[in-house]
Structure formats: structure tokens, C-alpha cells
Length: 103
Image (tube, rainbow, N blue to C red; front, top):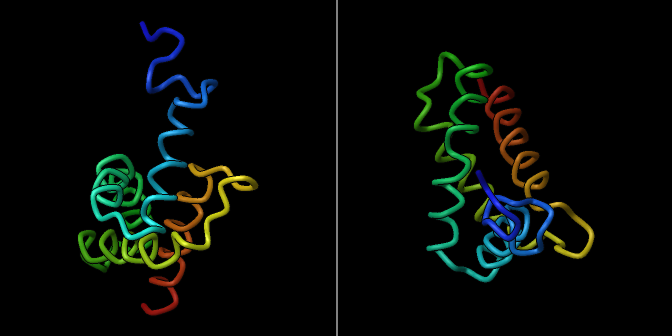
């Protein structure tokens, strides 16, 4: 069982939301290791979105394009006014939507 202060305790500033906020902010500053960690955390979600909405496109291509979008747009993330997890999910969904338009 996870206790208070665990990395997955979303109620703590250091919790999951705080971790993602830090990673997105670091991506905005050009930190490739932060992008790699975001990829590790969110690629299953990106893969599921791609499979559900872009079945004719190779999943790997769609997922990589989604994370390229996150990398390019991370500097637009505003940690004081945006939820980082929601921001990442929205960017992933938008990347899939762009893929649908291109299909």
C-alpha cells in the first residue's frame, strides 16, 4: 500500500502531478532525460490512443509523433495555471487528432 509522500500520491506536491509538472517544465527547458521519463510514463496511453483512432497507421510512428509534439510544445506549458497530467493527455489527444486529419 502506498503511503503519504509516495511518488504516486497525487495529493502531495512531490506526488505524481508534481513529478509530471517537473518533467514537462524540464522538457520546456530542453531536458531530453525528462522527455524520456515522460515517454516511459505515458507511452502506454499514447499507444492506446493511436490503436483506437489510427488503426491503419503504425503505432510506433503515431506515438513518436505525439512525443515530438510534447517536446516542441513543452515551453507553452504554464505550471501555475495548468494541470500537467491533463496537459500531457491533451497534447497526446491533439497529436492523434492531427494524425486523423492527415490520414
